Image (tube, rainbow, N blue to C red; front, side, top):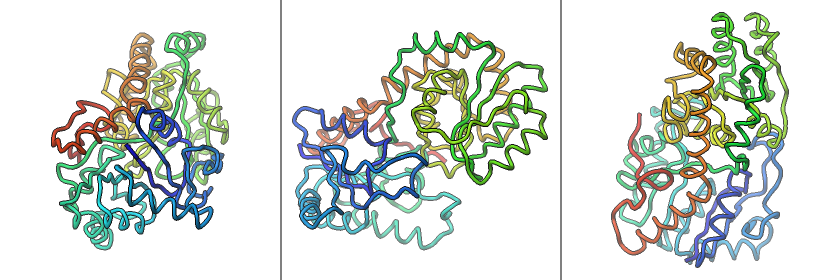
Length: 384
């Protein structure tokens, strides 16, 4: 089976999945990078990966490579169409064949809302007119299917999807032993310090717990335009003694911090289409306390079992969840172990590749059932 994934350029959180696809018996897998690497569109520290892997074809490198990519677009048994130019999508639709639109949610306030007529019109034209074709949605986030359904697209043709970063390779036993050495619980926040990441909510939760008399330390990793304001809030909340700002660090250092931390706070709002940091923290055995507005959270976190999912980061439930986790070491251990198991068994790159292959086989053979019960490629429900 020839499977080709078209996107703008290769980024780290796609690499593990691509490797797993390439390792499937009987599968000829290619990732087509339609554009040159753009450092401005990715997290600081990521490098150009377009030429580092044999499975990646940079269509922008030469005319010959562009022609190879066009042939793959027309002839592949299965095409995954991510953040590539729409010209590639139209080419695939003209050629026919099983195709998946890989997409985060459409309606993010930082870009446009449901009132944006242009966005609605483009979505209708780009997907709904092909409703009778073998075109499906891989919904990279729990709210993606609802956004497309609002536009009349992919009704009953949407499957759960996401991002599958490599994460920690250490066993839960090794991670638990390291965390047990912490003199007091360690809390971690990591990300770009921009408005919709709402790092200030982490500080508000820390303030709540300090006033409750709880002992802990918190590390804030990252930088950005909100950093100065966050430092001011930290001082205002009298948190300078227990909160430390660590600056921007490479992804490897952030993962190492997760492996040591007991609790990870994920505070983004609905502008976070997925939030791969949740996968990474769960793989490191952290008890993740997260805003349910993030696209990954309804898929990954079962509240109270493998973490805590709160309506939004700024409400009282978020601080209360942190207090609960700080007070109960046994609960943190149970949640951390379950979180590790969730991403290792159900939401890993390996599981995604296996499930996608099974789904492709079913659709290519004419089956109309959903062969996957949970995890990647399970039926995507309409969540609001």
